[in-house]
Image (cartoon, rainbow, N blue to C red; front, side):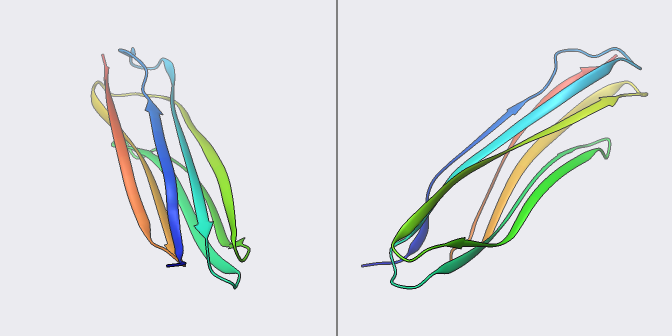
Amino acid sequence: MAGTFIDSQNLDISCPGTVLVGQSSVISGRASFRLVNETDTDVFFNILVHLTDTVGYRAEQSQTFQVVVANGDLTDSYSLFINENYTNSGLVTATLKIEITGAATFSDSVECNFNVV
C-alpha cells in the first residue's frame, strides 16, 4: 500500500560538562530525517526543529511546504546551537525537538543536562 511516511529520523544533542557562571558554553543539536512519498502526487511537509533550555534560550529552524515529489523521498538534517553565558548557578536541561506535519505527522525529542556552578 502506497503512502507518505517518515522512514527514519535521528536526534543528537550535546550539552557541555560543568559550566562556570559567566563562562561561554555551547549546546548543540542535530536532527536528521528521511521523508518518503510512495503516492502518485507531490506532497507537502512542514518541518520545525527547535533547541531550547530551561533558562529560556532558544534556536530554531523550520521549513514550510517542503515538497516531496511523487514516488520520491527527501533526506535532510538541521543543526542548531545555543552559545550563551549563564549568569545563575543550577541545573540546566536542554531539549531538541522535531515536529513534522503535513502529509504525515511525527514528533520526537531528546534531552541532556548540565550544571552551572
